[in-house]
Length: 187
Image 1 (tube, helix red, strand yellow):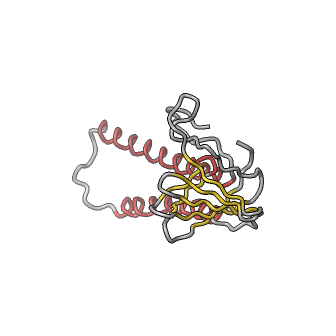
Image 2: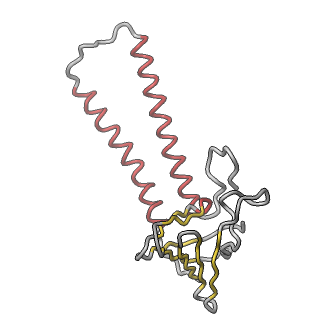
Image 3: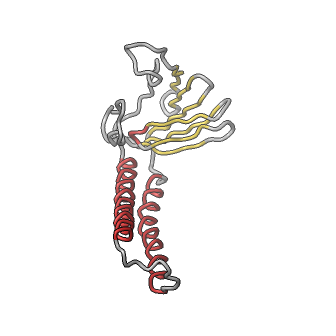
């Protein structure tokens, strides 16, 4: 659950978010190793009185600082592509949910079940609710069930998101966007 001044991700509730967090941890580990290496080299150069400031050519060094970043980028590329394709993997959905954005509210439809639909308005500011997060009718998503979510807009561009699922979609007028949802636990 998200709290104030939280400096990390929300608790993961889907395999998609687990993959995103793993990829984030990998890239942060690589970035921290690069930062530590650069700081070490800068301190070493600053403290060393015997550095050659007029070094013009060193082919071995140039090959190393060309191939090393290329290798690091290739090392990051493969987990990135794996995560990207895993998120776009098409499941066999049991339920389809339509989310239609309006300027001040969202309309939800469950067309697979007797065409159930409802509007969801944001609640006014009060001490009993989460500010700018609570609505009068919440979307209900079944647990451990593949779901297809379809979004569109009636007026302007909106964003539909559930951070703990690793899902953020743009709702654009005249365009239908879709994604898959799968929750690991209720909540």
